[in-house]
Amino acid sequence: MKTTTSDIEITELRKMLRPRSPFAHKGTMGHALLISGSRGMAGATVLSAEACLRSGIGKLSIHTPACNLTVLQTSIPEAIVAMDRNLDFIGDTKDTEPYNAIGIGPGMGTREETGLALKTYLANATRPMVIDADAINMLGMNSGWISLVPRHSILTPHAKEAKRLLGIYMTLDDIPTFAKEHQVYFVLKGHDTAIYSPTGEVRICKAGNAGMATAGSGDVLTGIITGLLAQGYPPDEASQLGVWLHATAGDCAAEEMGEECMLARDIIRYLPNAFRILKNEL
Image (cartoon, rainbow, N blue to C red; front, side, top):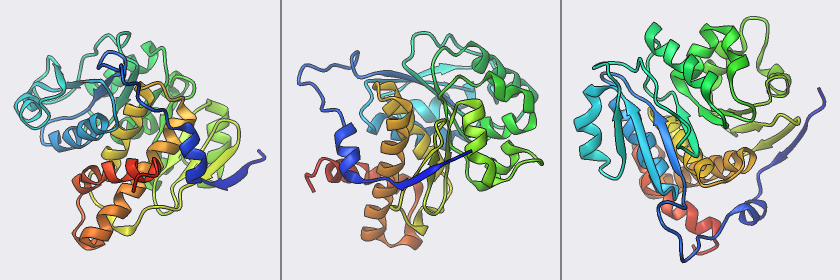
């Protein structure tokens, strides 16, 4: 298919950014559901949840295994924890209707029971989702499930996850066709992260650095985009703003700390700087 490629420009992002009303309250700033975690992977949920909250969202609920309750209630007290009935993994589902956006995948694992929960979530969703990490891996393991993904959902794989998702008959060069066929936004993470839209447009983010090649960085991006989507940004804008804010926060962290010493949590730490740069305040 014919594609058009262009860089993400801060001048365009500034036009997208919505000022917060002085009369805003938590009920008007969006409520997201994050489906994340398994035993030993609570950290992925913590990173994604904090990034989501730092993106400006009003409320966040987290569906996670019961084993993660203490960790999350301690480290993310602002979030509501909706425990799974299973102790170590996600195996049931929650009603998604009350939420403005859904993020799914970080640290979930790929157990059969978790896969069935993912399938149910996809089949019942009535709005675009942010799909990452193990949720993408499970889509790659069950090729027929991609048809269940809600239109205009945002998939955020790195190159290895993308190859699993595309299957043996497609390559990374086929991503524009995949995005159009399934009507999804395909965010290919890495150096010069690329956002492939269902319309054939490709937007490239030139911000970011090698210090962001660290465990948990992708979980942070999932949280940011989910938070923006819940606030009412359409998927195209949520993808572009989320990728740029994530990358720019990473650049701010690298400038202060050096690339070698960066952790994923540092991207969250410098997210306020990225917002201030976007608003031309820094």
